[in-house]
Image 1: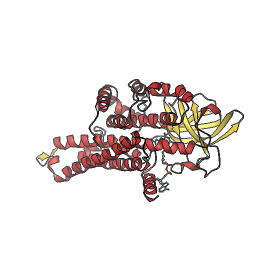
Image 2: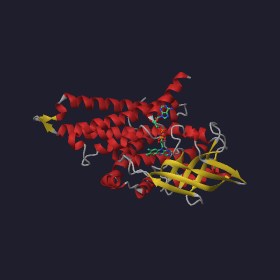
Image 3: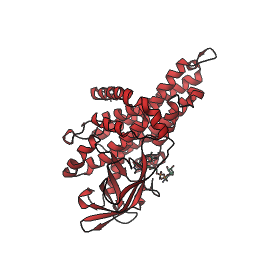
Image 4: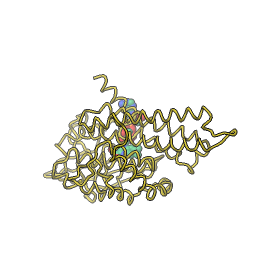
Length: 379
Ligand SMILES: Cc1cc2nc3c(=O)[nH]c(=O)nc-3n(C[C@H](O)[C@H](O)[C@H](O)COP(=O)(O)OP(=O)(O)OC[C@H]3O[C@@H](n4cnc5c(N)ncnc54)[C@H](O)[C@@H]3O)c2cc1C
């Protein structure tokens, strides 16, 4: 397998770099301090084709593969992981769910608006009492004539406030039945559909996370994705691909942290020499670069399988688990390399350190990834 950037990847990396220098990097600190989700920047990224990376051109998307998708998230994460997380949630979850399971009519109706980020997408699986055990969800959808009436709430939802459209999983059958849940598309402005509390987070502060609330929210039958009862199984398939995106997010965070630590270690002098000359520091850098390369190999292997339409539950979980843990370790070590300065907001490593933790939690915790891996190898 050849992992050097292809022409598309080079073009994407270059475009993000140029766009980011002007539109992202100067504002990262402010967004992080104020928990500002930069809606305008998100929409501009849509104009650049980054909000429909995997969507075929016939629906207005960029029509790229997971290989290019990984590069886009990784490069955005180097600049600002929050923007990378939001981009991943919009592309993989909301847009990805409609792309994978929508009818032709549904795809034509919603995808063109999502790929340009004219509409921002959200995806609701998690609830206050059901995260890892999402199948035990309490939000219900009950059939009433031609409509379904949804009641309940979703928690920790990316773009719950700024989103214009959400794919939401709700219970339509018995608890404990994996075929007892259904996926609904709900547009902003639908009566009974509101957002709630915005979370004040440790990291990823520029990516909006809040509640979605459903109070007798009436949804037409035509807004169901796939068949009644398929929602949970669909969600698990969406997460298979989504895991690649969180792994790419971790990779970008690790690369950003490493680059900052490498540069600083060559410039900072103590005891009359650059700190990179101390083996304790050089070995940290050696560990970082090795673990980053290993993450990259796992991610592109999972992406390659996904591109070829092969089963990749195992590879996706391995990539997500390993890259997330590497992001936490590398960013922690980067703070250490920068010493006291690493602990300040004058350098990006403290933000990478805070942002990295999300990777081991979102779209399935590290523990859940290990459960998935174990299930795959023991079946
Ligand atoms: C910033 C952010 C954005 C998010 N965006 C979205 C979104 O857009 N849409 C969405 O639906 N969700 C979203 N989530 C939710 C996320 O997917 C959940 O937080 C995650 O799945 C974990 O669920 P939980 O927080 O309820 O933790 P819990 O499931 O309560 O887990 C708590 C701890 O117990 C461990 N644990 C649980 N079960 C087991 C087990 N069987 N074996 C071993 N250990 C176990 C977990 O690993 C964890 O360490 C987001 C979360 C965050 C923080």
